[in-house]
Image (cartoon, helix red, strand yellow):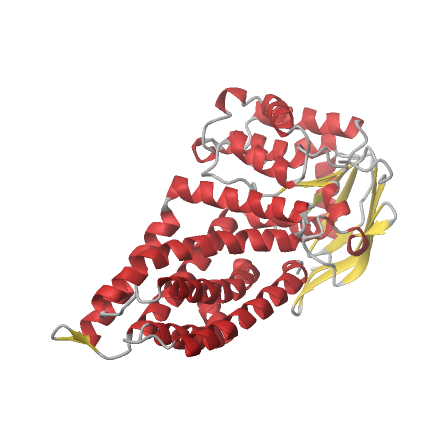
Length: 227
Length: 238
């Protein structure tokens, strides 16, 4: 188990170092997420008043879109010099390599969310500070489910010619349950009076999806990567 | 990390299909310790596919590859620990320095004394003075030298090289040949795919001619490799 987490840490550390040097993924993903929120605000905020209860949906759409961009770019980086093959050739546990990539993408997406959530709160008058801890946990759980499936698919598609098209086509239908639970759970927390029971229910469901998706991905990563 | 008992690589009737396309069929050969086997053939002959199968990155659609007495399915990580591969793409992160790249892979392979191993590898590559420069600023030849050391960091038993002489000047190619001879004398099994027949003639102990994914019979060991290669191409079915 120690060896497993050692490999996870080595891969995460490498991804962070590469990103700190290039600043490519974070800058493009944050820029894209801000653009998505701004575009929705232009059409859904009329005379300073947003359409009611639209904020959770906008937030999760922006997370899904920017997450897809981050997933694609992360694995494009591994494809360019074929370094993914080098990772797979190492005698390390392949699921540990998967978890390392997953943690890297999750950290990136959470940084994006730190920018995204206040922006959505500002443009759509959403009470983001009403239940900040529960909101953070809901976002983290939803992001984990989304990235768990996305990391597996992005790695699978790394050598496919039309990977940029195939990734969202495969990813969005699979993550519909996560998106629904994320939107409903967030909506319950962003109501004028947060409905904690409903939020807890959807958070529980998100947790269950996370467990299922992560276990399935860990189980299938090795066979799908050996073509 | 190398396994002393792993003295023979056996490829038995290996085929690989991508959908309906046959990338490889009926490939059979062995490579023993101290041998340098060359995969020779035109572009699209299946050389890289075969190297990927030997590296356990692809599964054969038919046939078996045996490392000593174990197949890749039974060996898993142990087999991968005895393989070092230099691909046509160099498996290096351009945003990292030469030292960081080698350190990352040394850690990934679970080597002990990582700084010592990396320093030795940098000396071997002749790039100690540029160790802390980003790989993105290196020439193709310099990157190739770092990539070779990355492939050899864990002292692998089986060394797989895909077009290792591409982009190298004469001095670098000579250094690579000398490094491979050194590994050969150490008892490693070496399989390389190359188009450079002049270098291959002096280096290989056994050529495998691959045309359209099929091995073609060698016309005889008395002649120069270039003539044997041309004879193999001429004899291949269209």
